[in-house]
Image (cartoon, rainbow, N blue to C red; front, side, top):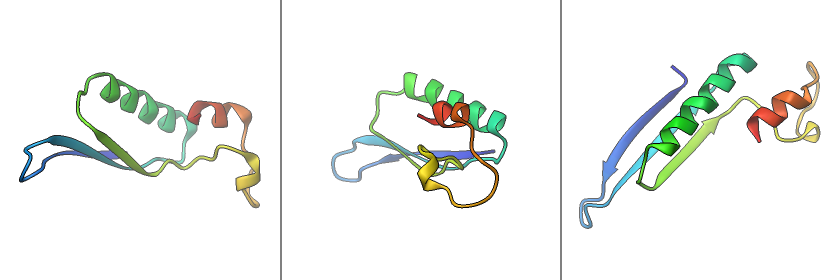
Length: 79
């Protein structure tokens, strides 16, 4: 499991919203699966939604120090 999603109801207004906490796997293929799952969830919700956590990726090479280089396709998958 890479994510946990819960629905909440505000006690005064009874408004519904959902929160997804995630911790992505290291594999680019697994992260792509996570993004597809999130996209499916986004297309099937009418509630305010907060998504946060560690996506295990970067948006730009300047964010990375050391280790293996990141490929542009990995960045594009995230963006």
